[in-house]
Length: 472
Ligand SMILES: [Zn+2]
Image (cartoon, rainbow, N blue to C red; front, side, top):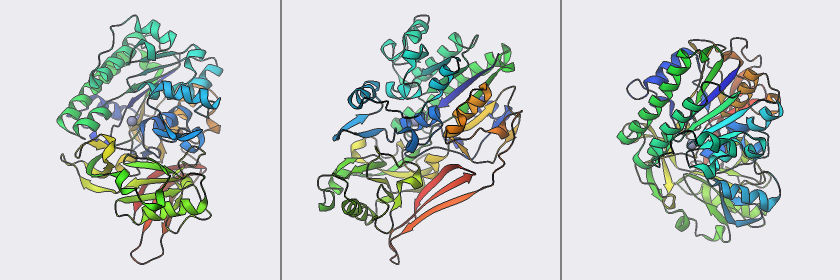
């Protein structure tokens, strides 16, 4: 028997793993190999991250380039990727798959191995983990109820009590559901996605009492899986990977983005806001893209500015390829709002402005940008085939999870992914043979005291990870 369970704690910052809140994650971290250099993708938004976990690819490859995307046939329309029905409608409209790379679901099905998804995330988030699960006969159980499950998932759902409605309770319910229905005879690979501590961080604040309570409950549910795993003998053949998809920063101010962008340079443009966002320039002429980017770079509330146009981009703009997000669906100009290393109300480091239309409050948590605290993620592995008590200082990230799961299961497909097999964490693996080193993408207006920005990356051979983006 040979099996892998991936448990994702949505939005969990590595520094929130503490013995007073997450004793089971602390226990787990000492069992196997921990990857303290693990990083998210940009934009550090849940559906973008989810798709990178599932496909082992960056957004430039998988094409789910933002939580809210411009509709490719009509940029005045938005595709809200949290809603599975909107992703299915987009596939109908365009006649092609929204996620452009095969994921764990497809590759395992092709290899004749079974795969299951249990998620308390949004229906769109669950779709991104296994878009063809229904046709492939795979189990998808969603805490949003039967309509969000596959037929095989509904058969599982019928055996347990119905899901609760509160997000924190749903995270516990989905973890217990996997433990009670799957652990005794798990599929080759399972993804268990917990919507906490993300939801409580957004609405109650990062490391707030409510956030800690939700995380404590999710950790306890994970602890019950760990207990049954070690006591039931599954530890001999079921490997467990624990990850988060992105971090969080505290909102320290509001920008009325619509009002700020009501300027001549942006007339006719379509705008997606947040703490990072995108601008669609009608017709995409290079000079207009340059004007939009130039306007943004003159604003003190803007951090990074990335353009689709490299030839005529104004001095100071970086190409979207620097953040691995260059794709036909990406807006012509991407931006992050001003962010930094200040402290939130509970002392958690990392702050950002946000668009006032995002519906979140000052003091609450957010993510989506390139702040180091948004990009740093949890990644650790344990089990009979994982090196015990190890810490790897090799760069790693979301894109390495799928290749490593495939390697553990002996299934092909990892070589066409952006990520690498985390060989240094495996008992039968080895450290990368390629050299590693930092990379820096820098751009400046050229004027003394003018706009300048940098994106720091880490590289090992052909593999690359984004460390952070800053306005310098
Ligand atoms: Zn998330």
